[in-house]
Length: 178
Image 1: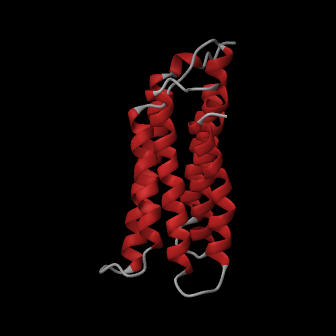
Image 2: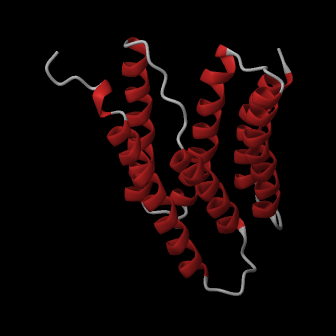
């Protein structure tokens, strides 16, 4: 297993660590969970960079990297949703987009085409991870409700935009007449 794939697997392993820290009752557990989330998020950027730079792209990495990313982000969103800080409708938007884009990619592969991550998808991933990091912080000089709603709006808008863009740019993949 090459280094990028090891980093991807590290991200998967960090997800239950994040959850345990999130649920443990000790002072500043949210910051401990945040530290794990940041490390896991950084592996998402690092594994792709190393894989492309060193020609270490593998089928396992193509499959597991986006799955690990979705698992990490949805885990954090679900935790905030359970606290009432992330609305369920926004979580559904994120999940629906992820399922829809994954389905589109499966149809494309079946037709011999690969749909690479677009720029808007990268912006969505980055902004989502930054927003989730900010939501862990409880000492910011703005009310937590303002922070939460700002983050929810950024996540929802970038998620919707990137999802629509994937379908518009790849609408020819979906042949409605077959």
